[in-house]
Image (cartoon, rainbow, N blue to C red):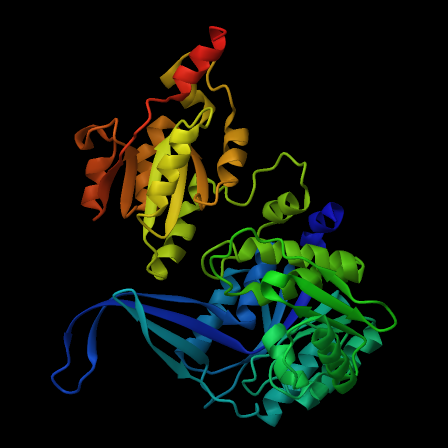
Length: 482
């Protein structure tokens, strides 16, 4: 599996589906409109991200794959904006067709004072024009010999029709390529000829007309879907219960979830589709591909928002004895993206920093209390050189890599970052914590960076320490043979 992952960058896939923009409008509410009994939202900021099939493209590029994207957007500003976003990702946009008088799908979520108050959809579900259809099919047929697999991301917006699926599967069959579909709607018969369908539990229940509540109903739902769609392979994702693969002529292959903590399931289906496409396109078996996709899903639901999975993270998740950092580790230079996603969802960020060399009960108490002050706890640890400068020769007794592993095992800790002592200001500027936490052995005025946090709108919190315990004391005790 590691060999397959390292070859992701050599794999070229085609993503075809409904392309859209996800817009987030953040604001404050301090009054009711005099015109109607509704809140007045004072906008603070707006964010735009790739949605729909675009998030599959984003996932694939994060894994190093080469991607061609196909779909239909409008000719107005949003259509141009989507193409620019794909171009920025270095994706092949020749298959993105612009259709006059067709709006580009935009989903606007308005979040005010920590509440999701409204969603506004700008879209149409009408079929694309005949001209757009023929241009799209022509592109798909021309590029098919150059790719390893086709990923169809259907959001039921008028693009993925029975006619389009017939042309896609015919071209794929002629060139010996996989077609993997993330389906929508109730009629799966339009996906005839696809290699693999990947509905989640709810989607499978609706399509099969049966509530999936146990292994028997799961098997019956799979039987009905495979018969209706005429497909030989079906993967049903089951959330916390993992995944179940059904292959004609084989017993069901079910695996448990790989997630320890779940923060956000947004985009998990896109991640599964992406990894399946890469693995199968590079010759992995269905079962190995499912294992890799399941590991990737376990990583992405442990993140906030539709953050993609990286190659190192996936390799680490599949290598229980490997030396790579676990997924809770975030390099300092990548913190801004994480923080931006957290703040976009109005998550309250708590930061605590220290050496944390030889973790003890006092540290565990500190982390648990810190986590209660917000939604997301980032623990920043001094790198080995900084610990040595602070504590003297012979320290740290536990290196940064192992300290990360230990901290990542704690449920109260959401992310771990390593920094040098002279990078504290850079760290605080990247995180912009709502709360900076230290133990009560400090005075507020003594907390380094406290003034910067206050200028950023945050505060310093001191956690009471009830036990006289320290790493240095424990180390001295051990050295003295006591």
